[in-house]
Length: 192
Image (tube, rainbow, N blue to C red):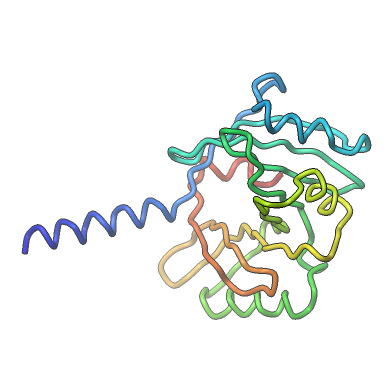
């Protein structure tokens, strides 16, 4: 009996840690970026501006991210430690989402929280392993509507007991997928 209780407690503790985002980001020189990722970055459109390189840690997970502006939009491309493309994120305005998607997202927040305030909204394009990655990046940069994004939203939410800042993920229809609580020190860089 004690073993069962111990295992259940261990599972609950492990689950609660996995739901918290404690991300740290530091700017690095281009030379420290994974070679495999640099091959894709070097093929970016010449009109990409303010290209910056970062190393991220979120618990035990390490990744690399390049941030830049292209046609007045802010992009970030995330790579694994091995330089494998994971996703591309584009900063967007909530009001520019389709009406049905906005309604679905608002319904989730209104039914789950007493109050909410959206802080940051991004379209998130997940890499397809079998895709031509140069073409995938080009399609996202050119806003190819055939690629359906998820939406990642940073929001301040309040319920009866507490106020939190969380990262929410919704699918391309605005249906809730998951959320994670942001630790205060990981919040400092989320605005870009």
